Image 1 (cartoon, rainbow, N blue to C red):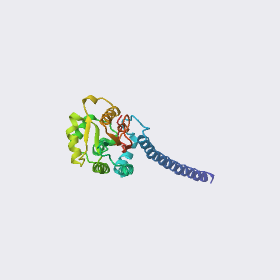
Image 2 (image 1 turned 90 degrees about the vertical axis):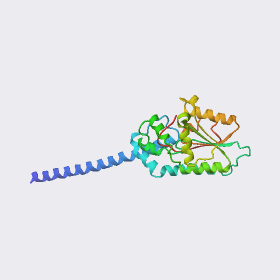
Image 3 (image 1 turned 45 degrees about the vertical axis):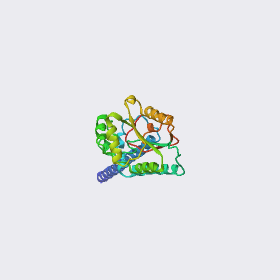
Image 4 (image 1 turned 180 degrees about the horizontal axis):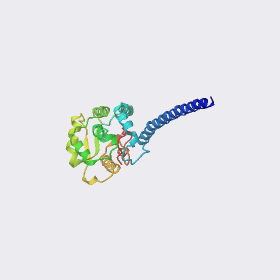
Length: 253
């Protein structure tokens, strides 16, 4: 009798241990899954606040997070919020009669979207490939980012001089970039400025600062500056106010 009771007790203990272990494992799994999204939310906040710098690719555990961010609607909503803030800033702004009130807009992932390209690069998990990106850009098929296209058109219609400033190489990508922009509705800008040979190898902050310095010397008042990279918005003569378009896929120093 004692032996039977002992056997029953052992079976009960084993069952309890099995159930308890599965419960602990399930809770551990849940804990492991939640911090990934939480970490990626915090990582993207650090990116947008310019606390995370000089990163070369997105964190591997954030691949599906970035994919969902870019495709699930949140990216578009975030861009729309930025553009609405610009409209509020513009509400009482009237360009001067001298034609010197200017805005600067970046091109890649500000005016034109490279999302289709970065889908093939796992949303920035793969290292940047200059040759592949050049081949992509030469297709002149980047779609406009709708909210920024609407902003561009309003700026032009309001009488501001809009300068499109991009780090794309003038010699190799100038024609394709202009064609792409015009095909997407970016018509009426004052000038598009691409990177010429004397700025090759120079960082984006230096290059764009030098261009803005030249515009300032020409008498232009930079009333606003819009870009997806902090390097678009740093340096000298950044303008009266800067606005950053979100970008969770890559960092340009």
